Length: 220
Image 1 (cartoon, one colour):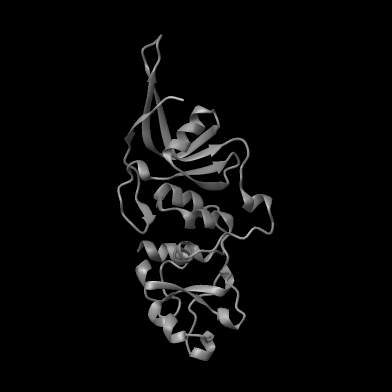
Image 2 (cartoon, one colour):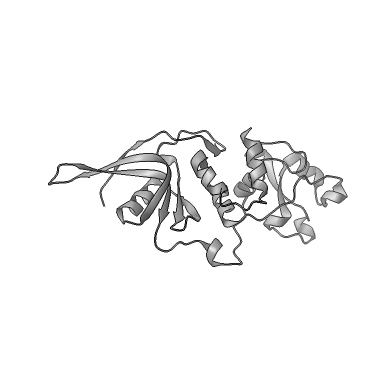
């Protein structure tokens, strides 16, 4: 495979926690040939897919223009334009489609993003370092560590609730927790989601998804 140099092409605004310049760190959204979101990949993996002929079509803006080797006969240098969304052929590796019982892994990073970095008790938005995972039914009282029993809480509210249920603590839960679908989970895993990637992912969210409202409020 050719060794590629690169030029980053400016793209749209992003929906993420940090406003770092895209450069070569910007992730590419990979989908299957039917258009279902699969995963985030870096520019190296994207170039490999282009080189192997596995890119069926592309969507969104061009993120990178990568320059490869020079053809000995024509003297022309190969160029690959990597788009923000690439649809690929072959094995999809999408557990959300192949397994009816699939449950996305739960961790604080995706949980906090699901809840838009809001404390589900006081309603205020906090930096990640000031947030915690709260079990609605306390873990020590039989509550499970699952998507539908956990919410984002600021450390102050979590300490005030302690080992009680919200009702016992006299604290109102502002939203019902939910388990994300696979396309929603792909969004939650994204480090910095560009506007065209976000629009594409939103089209695959359930109409009833709380993320629609949370993202609209987050943007304003």
